[in-house]
Structures are given as C-alpha cells and as structure tokens.
Length: 109
Length: 120
Image 1 (cartoon, rainbow over the protein chains, first blue to last red):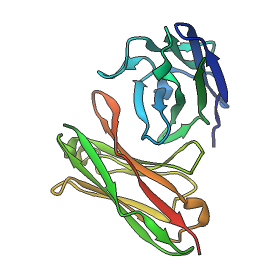
Image 2: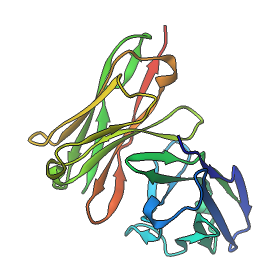
Image 3: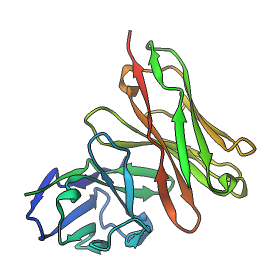
C-alpha cells in the first residue's frame, strides 16, 4: 500500500504565498497519479479545489494553483486570505486505488 | 443544483451491519462514478471504495481495510448509491461521505456526510 505524505502544518502570512506538497512512497508523482487537492474547514465536508494535477473547478479561487514540483504534486496559494485557513488533503491514484495524504493544517497568521 | 445527500448512519455494535445511502439530484446520475470516503474524528480522509457507471460495467473497487466486508451498489433509476457494511469493527467508526466523478470534470461535489459509530 503506497503512502502519500504531506506537511503536517504550515503557516502563511496574510497576502503571502505558500506551497503545499504531496509526495508518494513509490517515487515521483506524475500526471498519471491524477493528483487532487481538497480543502476542508472545521465541521464541513471536503471541497474539491484541484483535479488532475492543475485543473480548477468553477468555485476554486484563482489564487489556488496545482502543479508538479520536485517529484511531488504541489498546491500553491498566492495571496493567502484569512478564509483560506483550513486543512488541505491531496490524493493520488494508483491503478484503481486512491490514497489520501494525511493532510496539511494551514494557518494564516 | 448538483447535490448528494447521505443517510443511514447510526450506532451499531461490533460485528453488526449497516447500509448507507447516497441520494443524487441535479445531474445525470447514470454518467457518474460514485465514491465513498470516510473520516474518523480528527483524522484524515480514507477512500473506502467506488462504483463506476454502466458504460464501465458498474465496476467496483475497495480499500484493503474494507474489502470483503463492504459492498457498494447503485440504482440508476432511483439515482441512489449504497454502501452495505457488514462485520463492522470499532475502527470503522467515522463520518462517511459520498462524492461523484464526472467523466470530464473529475471529482467535484461531496455530500454532507453521515456518521457511523461502531461501539458496544
């Protein structure tokens, strides 16, 4: 069973830029893992932000972008807002199985 | 409005069974793959399994932790998906979400979740 790793916690200043990463125990993350990014605020269901590495849904603010960076999937937030404080989860697809990362708690402070 | 609504959660004893439902509205249900994802309190998300659409022969997939105990099914005429959970364990205690995958836009909408508690 592959393991997907994320930073446990990250802090960003309001207006700042931050990159969260999503790594795989099997090696380099590629587009073939169809990386997804989700945002979850306390007491709410997850919300899909990014799918298939870098595609935004209609509700995803343009300040969020997805990419592949240094062998990992990455979620970059440019111009952090207080409302972006949340947990962020990624998942990777492995030949029919989905594996979620442990999540990153993003603090905007 | 595209919407998914889960129901059927509750308290069940270890070894018991429970069937969750996911009601869809606002989209062509038969075109979508439905996923079940769970989250234990204060923990991360865990893929439980999925059921594909009719063009993909309603293929299913399950996480190793639930394989052989959980079964996913769907009724396209009712726009419903189901998660039958048997031989429940305390570690199955979680919020259970359903979500859809559309062929062109991937996974998008999630339900609000239903809570399952396995305890004696």
